[in-house]
Length: 410
Ligand code: S3P
Picture 1 (tube, rainbow, N blue to C red):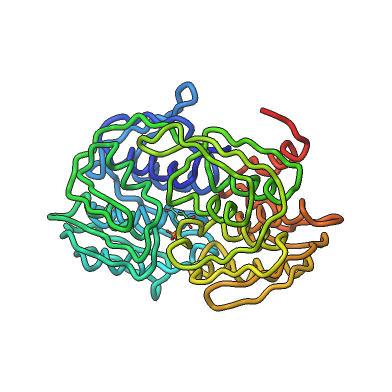
Picture 2: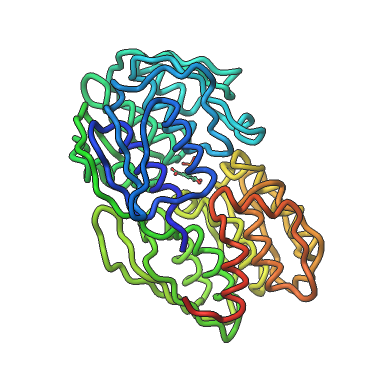
């Protein structure tokens, strides 16, 4: 699988705020991660490539230079939100902007806690661009109104430069990559399911290997699970408990799927084995949602293959992702003949047969890949418009899909 996007962002950001040289192996070259890298370059961080390794040379946040133009976060919410946390406690001023989709995404969720810590951030009525004037910060306890790893991470990263202790208590546990990686760099961090705490820390340069992206694997795992006779092995992929809710749901659907953790530090990683068969419908709500938020589009495709009615609730966050993923997904699945119901916070899918049609990704990478899985399972031909947006997280997706359908082994 391609390198994990979430972990690659964090590896570059932590390398950038650490004094010295960090050495990273298997960093993603997807467009979102390149956005993080380019923003950091404009802040004066230097990257090098040596024998497939990404070297990060930095003097830490104190060495950042003030950019003269807005930093372009592209399509990447993770870049904008995590960088805002880092810049809030710096001593420079910077403006962050992005593409049309990112400029519509809510930023108050990170701005409010950072203002409460003493930060100075201007928005356009809660939306980007964000102008951050770095200031001395004071640690805080914050309970975000949404369960979001991006919000948690922005607050924790700001907490590294704040006086006192910064603590986040979540509505539901989210992925804990930031906490694990901070610990690996010697940061003063403590955490458990649904909470994390940091104090001002001097980080040590890291030597870190990014595992494969389990959210990228999800597209092929679901495709195999829905295809009787299919047999798929995924190697060296991240298995963080905050990311593998979709595997648990597939198992509840009756799929023959298993996974094994081979390494645990700092990030769990291992392999997944899945064999195709007949699936039952599912019901997803509450604490499970943040653990599979990015996999809901492809799980909707699995629901379309299961006999009966599946339902997703408490997933209103899908409306503020790269697209309104509830409206866009249902519009496109309807074109393939899938019966659906729409709710403010989710959807229902009535499983049956899918027929090929012309569909559109709405320039959303995860919708493009979920529709590719749907098209592979539907009868006839499916044409996906705006299919190039897979470059945001998985540039090699179309080639890998063709390889897997051809039954090739790597
Ligand atoms: C991410 C967290 C999730 C996820 C996004 C990446 C991260 O967003 O949807 O693709 O890297 O922390 P939220 O934390 O806003 O739900």
